[in-house]
Length: 144
Image 1 (cartoon, rainbow, N blue to C red):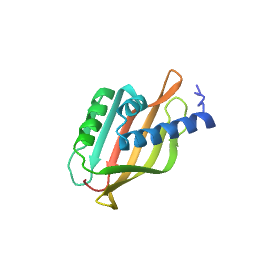
Image 2 (cartoon, one colour; image 1 turned 90 degrees about the vertical axis):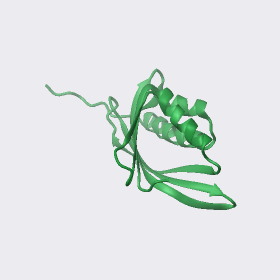
Image 3 (spheres, one colour; image 1 turned 60 degrees about the horizontal axis):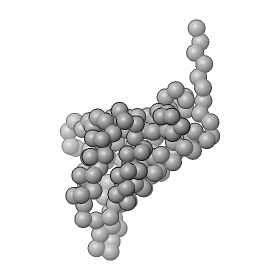
């Protein structure tokens, strides 16, 4: 039996690209309501920082938003999550995966510098009329 793979439409690809970009912008602007809207309720996020040991695993949208909230509260600078090299590892509509490169810039005391860089691997899921991040794996090349 052959299973037919349904490919993503251009509109779906654009919508998922926007979710990735919107989540980055929302983090930088401390718009936790927007961050929340980017993740599925049962989302899972792993964070692996080079040289820091085993990846951390955060389960559930509320926990992910809580992690971001505590990160923002601990900052005394402006962060900019610059997303680039966005492409689809899988464009099967049943389980699309978006890969993107992160350059994390920090602005403080009139100076901008790269704080870290890495990659996101986002498994997307349809939630009603919207695409949301179901699983996010973040791999950072440098600790911050």
